[in-house]
Image (cartoon, rainbow, N blue to C red; front, side, top):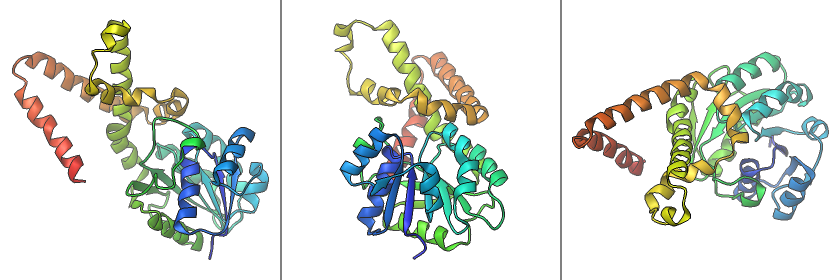
Amino acid sequence: MAIRTVSIVGVGLIGGSFALGLRKAGFDGRIVGVSSPATIAEALRLGAIDEGLPLTEAAAQSDLIYMAQPVARILEQLERVAALAPAHALVTDTGSTKEAIVERAREVFPPGGPAFLGGHPMAGKEGRGVGIAEADLFAEATYVLTTAAEHVPDTAAAAEFCAWLDKMGCRRRIMDAAAHDRVVAWTSHLPQLVSTALAGSVLEHVAADEDLQTAGNGLRDMTRLAAGSYAMWEGILKTNAAAIDDALRAFIRDLESLRAAAGAAGGHFERGQRLPKKLSRD
């Protein structure tokens, strides 16, 4: 086997879930965590990792380095990880935007050295931290892979990593990094921003607790994403600004059209009803 030691850099919800998913899928090698002392202690208690080490020590002895951090942190550490990783190793990430990360990887990963494979598991929760990690978080979820060369690296570690994703129940999809960022601007980033804006608007105009008690499941469902942390989203918004701006502009036009339609909005409803049907089939 090509992968015997895995280092999870950022043992939070995603990194912890990947580690637990590996174990459930049958991985019997060593899993090392690189995180804060408190996170390492919790990850050890949950059985997500076997030990915690500093990045320098962990990366140097790893066959797979799994960077499960916010986008900005991944970009900061890519060059260092590329320099530390053994030549046979695979480095992969879980950043929610891919173009900036893939471009940076193209710059810092030398030919003949460790391979890089960008990744984005389309799974998560509103909360953060390894305490809510789940072994089945990625099961049946789309797992996007992006590379500078537009194909999975032809290495033993990359092939085995993809095999473990399959064993975990992921639905692998290879995408161009720029295409990925355009799509997720609509399917992930716009929903977050709409939820955030809606929650802020409702709170400003219906602030009394007794009035908020009239809220039904519709408002709860629509504002669920508003609980997301800006610390996680800041890097996403900065690295996908143009695509997000395009999505927001188009969405605002749709809102203005709906506003102008007033009581004659049947066409808008008919168009909107098609998406839930498509998503339920998927």
